[in-house]
Amino acid sequence: MTHDALRHELHLLHLELPKNGLVAWTSGNVSARVQNASGGDHMLIKPSGVTFEELTPGGMVLTDLQAQVLESDLSPSSDTATHAYIYRELPHVGGIVHTHSPYATAWAANAHEIPCFLTAMADEFGGPIPCGDFALIGGEQIGAEVVRVLRNHRSPAIILQNHGVFTIGKTPRAALKAAVMAEDVARTAFLATQLGHPVPLSAADIDSLYDRYTNVYGQKKAATGETP
Image (cartoon, rainbow, N blue to C red; front, side, top):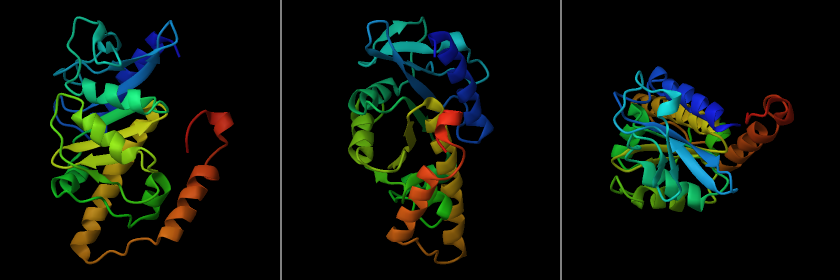
């Protein structure tokens, strides 16, 4: 995908955040790994403090993976160092999404993982959505916590104590899907706890469901180019 096409895609993906109730005002962001001309990696990310209505494809900020701006008059997101750290440490990640979606963040405020009560959650996340420790915004601490928890973990999502949600994917669209699904299962899990004592799925059933969803569900990946 060309840089211009990726800028256009990122613009459209950002518009999905408020559409799906994942953000308020200017909070939240999507980024993408970008290969540079010499074969190394840069990234594109949302500019800081710009409303989603004001975003444009050209407004996406290009940085290196040390979070240094390479091409823009706009300041990048305050989460840029976090995204850059994740890209450096997890080379399979091609897109990252950050939100403060209300139900998932409510679990984070309680420093509690989101339990795997639902088949849909076993499908998408392969078990509970883990809760990472608290880390301050602005540097690499959040990125380090995301990497610590998600490295070798099946879940593409993490909630961070007292903060919000980060999701990763092979593409920005895959990371966005994980963010949408994380809020959906967080809401249902919360409602279930209000009704009584929901029953977690067994580890064996989670493994079976995750394998089916990953390897059988949907159309052939070669035909669609997408994850299930």
